[in-house]
Image 1 (tube, rainbow, N blue to C red):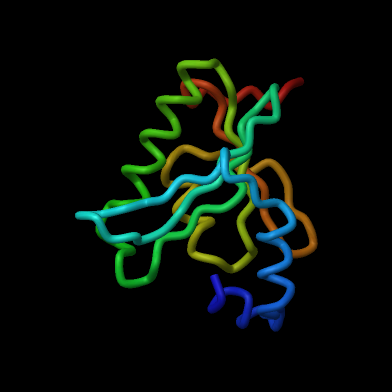
Image 2 (cartoon, one colour):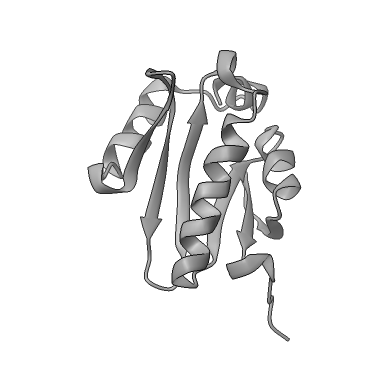
Length: 129
């Protein structure tokens, strides 16, 4: 993510740390391990009407091996079981935008620095009238 933030001229390690720490909830955070090695983490917050995929990080050396897809498959299964859509924001110009749309998330809006997506229960997106 640092690379994407640097491209936008927005990388600030103090701000990144503060953003993560201020919203940290151990019950919403999961480790991503491969063969016993920590390769990332994911934070999923339950907002009653939807699940927020708040953070999703896989270290660069482990990217491209299908780990992120496997993690999303598990998250999709859990969301579908409880009938909740999943929302996520992705920094503009980040490769994560392609990752999310490739996995069925639908673009809903753009903010100053982020794009926002939703994946409805069972991937059937209802954007209203």
